[in-house]
Image (cartoon, rainbow, N blue to C red; front, side, top):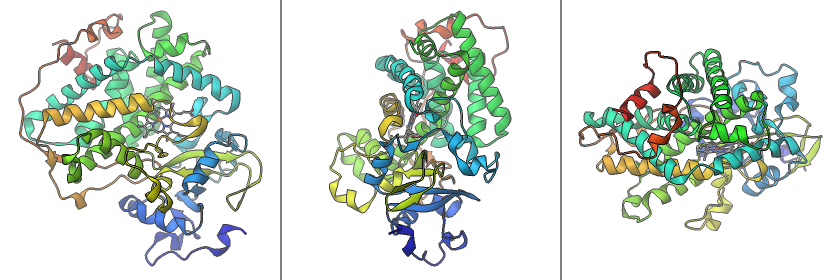
Length: 445
Ligand code: HEM
């Protein structure tokens, strides 16, 4: 039986009333209480009909085992979004707010089969070369720098002043960006995610990454860009640019939200104050209950097929709700303390290849903040906090906090930093005014 033959009636006031029965995953109501929407959607069965943006229709898997079944069946479900029927038929405008994350780009996220294996292997092997001590060190430096910018004030927006900036600075370091290139990477990615002149921002980002790739071809360094380039997959320049741009953008938004959502949890739940494993436990609980990517893993059936009681058409958009799958009633009893069987990193061949470095950056960023601002607390009532709208990412708009003001922290001693390639590369003598340049200046003060 088709699970949608007994479509549940949405509760009074639910916006699904006006959307042809499709549950809208955009707008302030969804952002304010997504769990209420997931509970409602479970009435449809393991999948529910949703709208990602006005007119963008999709099927959302909300059940944990059905999600695993889809994520592990790469013969039936493909990632290449050039198969997306509605997009190809012009039913989705190229400037739709969801298009930047769904439209095809030649990178591992949108490829299948042997091509995916080749591109992904280059990513996993290169990320595996990241030295954990060095990553902890550079995250600590970025963290101390950012705290030094607001620590004397006694108050800050931990989102805007801290978690939003930290991943990009750390990536600039990991990828071996010069001052000039790094400034443009920061400008481009920030603009793309904030929706500020997204087209111009993407142009700046791709231009900067193109220069980074050219630079590393002539001056290899001790960084992820160089390791990707030297990999036996022999990536072309175009592949290099798309892979590096993917890593920078796929990492930024979820990473800032993992740090932000975990900080939110720590500042709003007293239970962690009594826990020895404080931050580690708060990260796990966040990944289970408030994952940074709430709904994603876009897939397209290779042929018309039956799946979880549904008839799906070839090329229709199917996504997974990691947030709903993680919090389903069946899991509430199965979930053990310390279990990491959640789907926050997805699963199957396209699962996040960077969960260890992402977790390590998160851990260091939070640990350093709590060490330097031990009495940090929310500066506003918890229920006045707002979450950014959008179907894919889960993150706060702001996290206002207060703390006892501290003296500006001096730059930490840095034997590793001295070997970094940023200093070795010849750069045009331009005035350094960007945020990454200011950080580099602070490091060498
Ligand atoms: C160092 C930071 C990060 C980097 C460089 C990174 C990179 C990537 C890349 C390259 C992929 C595509 C893999 C493929 O298609 O084979 C991916 C997928 C994914 N990542 Fe990450 N990521 C980072 C952090 C995070 C964080 C913090 C989360 C959330 C907890 C996350 C969640 C995911 C998910 C759910 C997918 C699957 C997306 C899909 O199937 O379409 N990532 N990541």
